Length: 323
Image (cartoon, rainbow, N blue to C red; front, top):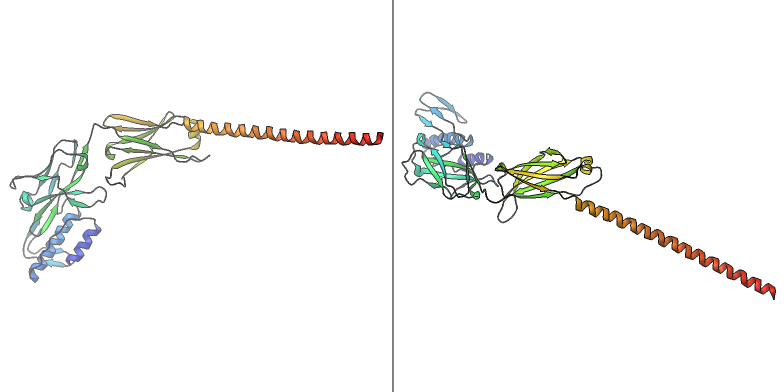
């Protein structure tokens, strides 16, 4: 198996962790290829896979081969699985690499970019200054909401790099309230009305969005994404489809967001829309009345003019017959 084929396989798995492979003589090349493939399996399956390969044991790595030496690869233990802190607090991440026979100076920390889902070396995590410390510790001092993400410890051993099972860090800012925006597209008669509620300034996993339509509490469905701006921000967008009859009858429509025990709601002011509709109807009615009055007046004037002309003609004929 070539180094190029290995890179292509790792790309399909969306893993961007470097697997170092140094090719020596033909015997070492074969041995390193087997070790690299085993390490690759360890990377792909996240939590790690242990293989015991001894004398007389055949292992299939694309081909069956009997090895005359032993290799023991153990997975990297990483904890805690989930960390939730407030902005400004320090964060401690643990990575137990004792079974890989490597010191903490060979440990690096990798963060998953939440937008591209790619792995990148984190500069926010400070390694333990003492490489002999066990387990290895990564510290994030004075954390901010931008530090939220998934962190993996990567341990280099010989020509291979192994990755831990990951720690999810959630950094919340309890002070500012989330921004809630309610949108209603064009309403068409007889069709369901689609409502959208966008919540910003809070981690989507920490926000619960519900709806109040009339006296009923509904949930709908939600999604999350990132704004397409210079400084991307994560947002939550909730959707709800309201039947046409309910939209006509229920006057109260609210988007309710619950975060850290706080409840923030945004109401849809339908009165202004109804007022505009009534104004349109009123103006249309007034215009129709004016048009009708103008039409009747015009017809009356034309009829009166015709009568006067007819009367003048009769008077002229009578005057001529008298002479």
